[in-house]
Amino acid sequence: MIADWQHAGKLIESRFLIDASFARRDPQAADMLRKRFGLSNVRVSQCHAKFATFRNDNWKLVLRTSMNLNMNPRFEDFTIANDPELYDFTETIMNELFARQKEGITMAPGDRSNVGRTFRENL
Image 1: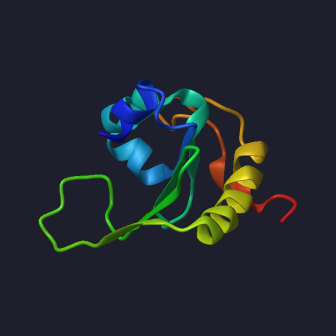
Image 2 (image 1 turned 90 degrees about the vertical axis):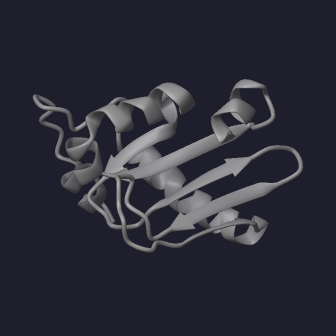
Image 3 (image 1 turned 135 degrees about the vertical axis):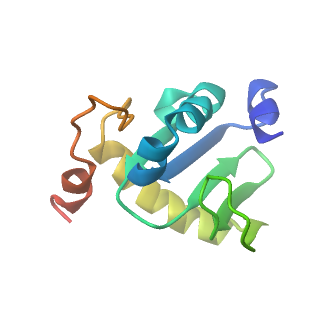
C-alpha cells in the first residue's frame, strides 16, 4: 500500500534502514524493498533498530517496529505515527547514515561492503 502511494505521487519521500542480517538472510525480500521504493531510499546497517520514514505535504510518518522482516510466528509490535518532531529527529539520523553509505550496498553474496565500518567511522 505505501509503495502504491509513492508510485502515485502521494509520498514525497520514503526511506528505510535495514539490518545486514536481513539483507543476507532474505536477499529476495530486500531486493523487493529496493525495487518498490528505489535503491536510493534503502541503506543497510549492522543494527537491530527497525524503522522507516514517509512524508508528503500533509504528514510526516515514522514507522517503528520490533518485527524482523521475515516469517515470524511470534507476537510482534509496530507503531506508525504522524509525529513531525519524531520524524525530524529520525531524519537527522537517517540523513547522516545515508550520507555515509553509498547507494546500492546489498550484502548479497559477493558484496564485500563493510557496513559496520560505515557507521562506526567519524561518530
